[in-house]
Length: 158
Image (cartoon, rainbow, N blue to C red):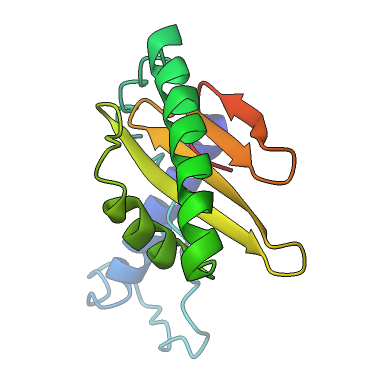
């Protein structure tokens, strides 16, 4: 705070000094000063803190039911998708996996769940499928061990 006050005082004095050089000398003064050829000092304003925006409301943590819904859905979809892939071949990306999921009309994702990632390993003809809930809950099914290998309550699919 003292530094700021000192800088403001110095800036005010420099401003006043610069203003006085344009005036005529007073009647009692016999001295005139030649115009200064020195460059005016550069004043750097003191930065003021920017107000920080209010933090967004934290999302509620996923409920046990939301976590379980991602696990249940991934355990239904991944094996069913693999059955389709035995006949039609494995897709190489998420778009192909989503097309396959649409063919599985006998399955329906739980409310708030989406197929969020699909990773295919062509060397082993295996894939990992991740289903994510809007709460951030997620579950990954890996066809190599034919099981859910990981799940979580926040952050969405890895």
